[in-house]
Length: 419
Image 1 (spheres, rainbow, N blue to C red):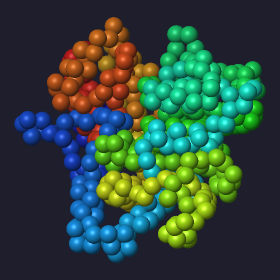
Image 2 (cartoon, rainbow, N blue to C red):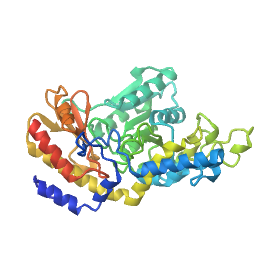
Image 3 (cartoon, rainbow, N blue to C red):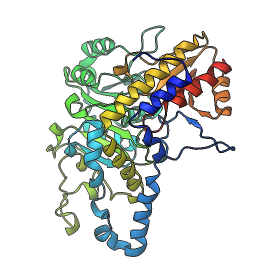
Image 4 (tube, helix red, strand yellow):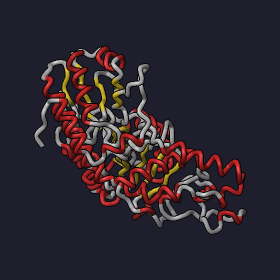
């Protein structure tokens, strides 16, 4: 649509927004005078749904009143609590329920998945990552290589072209075409944390599989933000956290995806625990290990209920609204944000996130010329909450669940004044 750079226009967009009511279902942090912060860091930590307290209190109440019997008699019995999350999480990432489970934390899940899917040989052992992968992904890959007797030199980096920030899929094709016989695994961030670029996951899977490489995706900045359609993409595995766009609270549990094509392969090596043993015989004890089919076969321990209750509160809200509606608003919200930034027409800043809405989520990464972090600090002093990523980027994410068009207008008005 054609945007206008007036407050009245922003307010009219909010009036027409069918999801505007969602903002009232979140706690918006306030300044010392009681005014709402302009919060643009859902890409780092999502805001708390007001329902979260009720969901957690239900489990505290059942624990107080039932003790251990809460595993069977609680309003939401704890024994299989993770199953309350599966269908709704599967919808968000575009998967079948058998392919998804909520467990552990993100990097833990990546390690558990690599136990199964990174099976290097003497000739096929290298790992491809983006050159600007999130540090924890790089550390995980480095440690896996060392564990198997290889070195950090066996990482192949998919890099932007000289003088550019974004990745080209053709460059990945070239890497795999020329070095694929030595590559065992591609582990790629589906949405790059720094630039906000949403990569073509299906294409990445096809490229990797053309040389019999396993393909894994880190969706930390994708889940709840874009629609990755994991099943149709044909990637082998994926993992993501839930405390960013999925609003589950700091350090909350993560999600894991294993494609259905691997679901019945009980010969895949994996670390084992009580909770990936067959449900039917789990409590018989003293049984030989019998791994469950599907993503549940990567669980280790019984679920931490209080964290899962917070995830359930958020997923129920996503399910009520419909992710396709959130994505539609997100594209409009981010497009308006982009329009107003470009209208500033300053040589001191530029957006490095792709212009094509299909190649980004709601995050826009603003590169600051001659960066010294001072602009970010001034925004914070004005109660505009963004985040800074070295060396020179301010990341801003207008989240469709709780950000408004007027939020964006006000933020840009202040930014323009600071510049």
